[in-house]
Image (tube, rainbow, N blue to C red; front, side, top):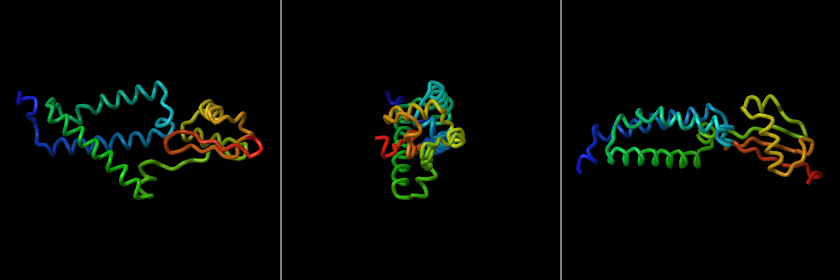
Length: 160
């Protein structure tokens, strides 16, 4: 029974692995763009599963004990809390970690180059219009791709 809790490496190896993998996955998610975070497609879901599988051995180092699993889960939870705490207190870190909102349409004009750069299809943009009860792009005063991947749409006053 004690074998279930026996670590194969020193505890700090698991913490170090957790920190490295957490930072790596955060960077990969930031590089993948806002669309990937807010509007999962089947492709995005497959990528997320494969990334989880790819980093599994790197994060646990082949460890199968319950103590190792608890240590890794605690490390990841602590890193997530620390990230939230830091971004809530620093605008600079918030912009680095979460990015910035981007204007994708204004005064009835869609910025196709911005949509392309942010990996948002025109179909996704049109869906955001429908979700926000806006009939056409001509009725848009402002459309913003938020840091969480959603598109906020502010209709023109006369379009309401």
